[in-house]
Image 1 (cartoon, one colour):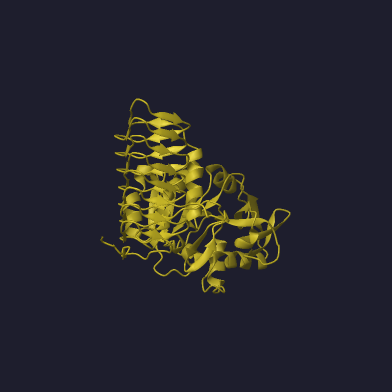
Image 2 (image 1 turned 90 degrees about the vertical axis):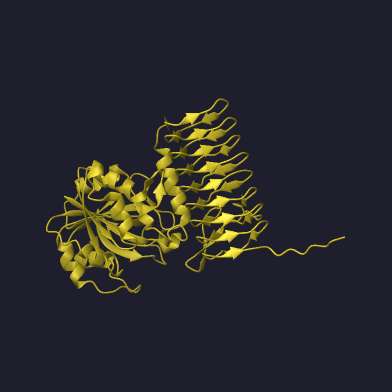
Length: 413
């Protein structure tokens, strides 16, 4: 069996961290999200992969090449126009049964393997119980067979969401040819599956047993980082100086140094060539990339800090995502809790969206610099290549390539 992985999308809901990369290449614990997915597929025994690529495809191809380093054989097909999942899958044109996964969804090897091994019908779909089915494509199942897929139903249909994991027979390609555009203007694979149902084909639904994470929004990215960190064991390849306290799991990369007086509450990931401390406090579910600097009296919590980024001293970053090549001035503080303690809202694609989280910090793009004593309020975004001058309080999102300064009136006596 071969696997088709859909990795063409941009991930506009995750901007600004996807302004220069596909969301499937977002780093999680030192590896792109897509690499975690490929490793899970490999464990099932599937070695031949077709990657459907599009946005920033060169970076995907440069990273994975022919797949040999992962023990896989990877071929690439470009989806030149983003016309939906049915169109993307239709590009594969396979004559045998095949697995399909989304390149932005973390699924355990056990669940993928269970779906592959139990595939005996025209199509097998992975489904997952969710608390808020109105936010998902919901699957109605009777006696193990899928009877309907309803996109974001206003009335209760089922609490089983379509997890975006499929095994198809070649019959799906005929259904794709008959698929018409949805209300969203795309050719969607769920429409193709409904055509198979109408034609009398059996579609089996299999419930996932492990945690499933669809990285559609920044807070989902943080959740996925947490999922991967929970599953990792301690591995220390760098230097830990005297008077460092470590509680829980830590992964410390080569040539990295944790300086004296630092306190770490795992699970925590620290990449290569990174220096932490002295006297820093690194709290659970923090991931630091390669060649980062975290200085004196800095506290980090439940955050993703990407490569070549510095948080030098006297700063706090919590529940946040910080891009590559950023530099925070001394005293930069990120707010992650509203004063009224209501859930934090964040603007996603120009729409104010409830994150559903009591604590959520900021999302900062690549190459951002902040001056001394900058304060960033909860739920705010700063676009790539922007500079924030000393003493600025960020109350609203900052577009990319913007220089923000605070006007000051001086009274001389």
